Amino acid sequence: NNNTAVPMKLSNLPLRPSTLSLLLRRGFTTTMDIEQSKQDGGISNFAAEVNCSIKDAFRIVREVEECQRRLLGDNGGDVNSSSSLQSKNKYGTTTTQSSNSMTAAAILQNTSSSSAASSSDPRHIITFCRTIDSLLGGGFARSEVTELCGIPGIGKTQLGMQLCVDARLPRIYGGVEGEAVYIDTEGSFSPERCY
Image 1 (cartoon, rainbow, N blue to C red):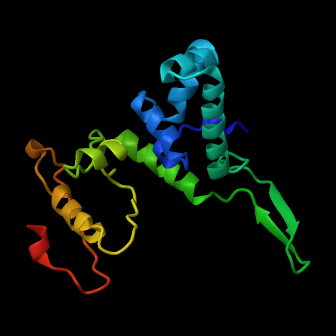
Image 2 (image 1 turned 60 degrees about the vertical axis):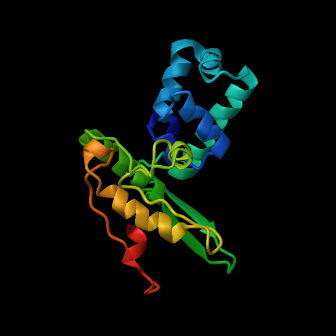
């Protein structure tokens, strides 16, 4: 099966940040965008649209295809495939793994494509920090999990609380009029920090 036939959002692939940023800046948001560019004029057309050398274009395409293969597996996330893989583990026993199982990424991709088709409002939750919103392709994507990590004291908690407030903003202020839940696992929530 050809994994590249399964359309995926580039932001759902484990691409290098520089590759993802370049593709998003040039207007490529899904794997189908890349395929369409190649179909319209070959790899040289894609290279021109991305504004890079043909060698770099090949590297980008290979990286996207490899990430997609890793996420979807060799069967491209095809749940109708009935083959199975047998292997011996380190204890010498044979294990059988059915290939009709799906990876978490394939499930996410299927959920993303079905929710994207039904959603008429693709806006992200903006942070009002132009740099962060730009790095994230317009803000924090709705219906996706985004992990904030770092050393203590750099603002993870504050950003999480601010995102809850930002998610509730009316559309006239650039918000999405959504709902948010803040789960405090440490018992240190301070509502004063949300003003």
